[in-house]
Image (cartoon, rainbow, N blue to C red; front, side, top):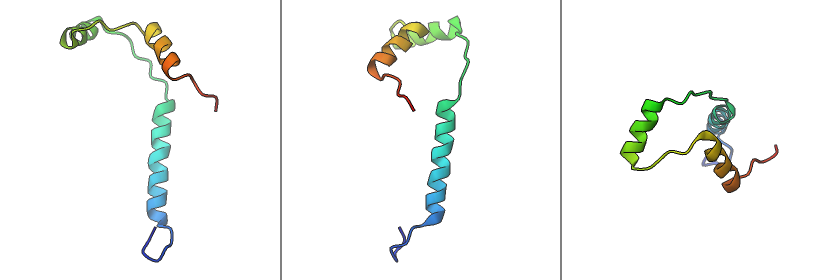
Length: 69
């Protein structure tokens, strides 16, 4: 809001554009190939074993089920 209680349309438009960009990145399908070397380095640096994609997806859906839009 501006000091005269009017909407700041420049700021309103800027925020809308940023939110649209975020939404586009969230909906994009990223097809990454697993690289065993990178996984090994991450496991060693974190001191843990990284679970596979299917297990991560299963856990993710339990914690945050997909919503219907």
